[in-house]
Image 1 (cartoon, rainbow, N blue to C red):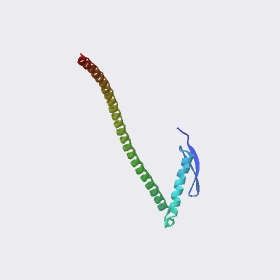
Image 2: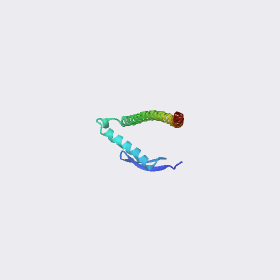
Image 3: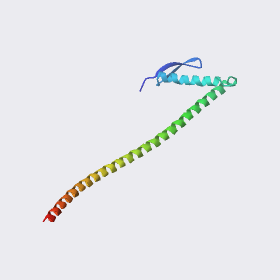
Image 4: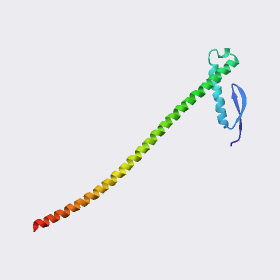
Length: 136
């Protein structure tokens, strides 16, 4: 298990010390995300007229909305990945089946070529016999 990290971050102009097992870079990223949300809300009309409790609720709702949208996207991507893995499995199965058919066809071709060579030899032998019989 990794050790706990303590990192100072600035959120809404105030310095906070965050601690956790995540990296300092990650904790700074979280603070940057919160600062972005705060800036977004401060730019909205009427935000400053709301009570601190209402501001906090709106911020929490907005962050929860982001979270659920990302979760939905993850689920969609996981479903898509599952479908792609299924397709890949089917393609691999089809490729193996085709490869087996090809190998069998090559064996059959080789057997037919061998049989053809034998028949050609037999034909030459029979023609030679026929020619000897006609000469007599």
